[in-house]
Length: 163
Image 1 (cartoon, rainbow, N blue to C red):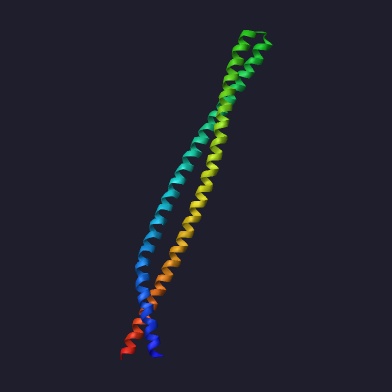
Image 2 (image 1 turned 60 degrees about the vertical axis):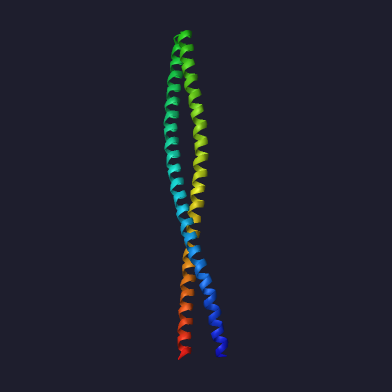
């Protein structure tokens, strides 16, 4: 019975030594992966901030062109009421120009909103990955601590057996 127990502890120690080497590599791999994902997270946040700033700028320009188009439309109405067709045509041309720019800006804004939503989804995914990696790292460290404790117990048992 005692020989079987000693053999078990020797096998456990040998496996532990191999596992310890793999553990160090795995721990470093987990740490490196966590750092990479955190960098990705920072990059995504920066991209989101830039996209939102650009969207807000385009929204301001869109509103400006909408207001200008409305102003020119009012001038068209005024020129028509005064029966000045040349002035009405000129004002109508400017009204259309501002509406065209506003429509192009609206397309860009909608496209930017889709990009922002995709970036936000990527951010959520990256945050989930970080949490999973942290959990795995904590679990891995707990297993490592348990293994070291088992090794110390085995060494203590060996020392006790030698007496």
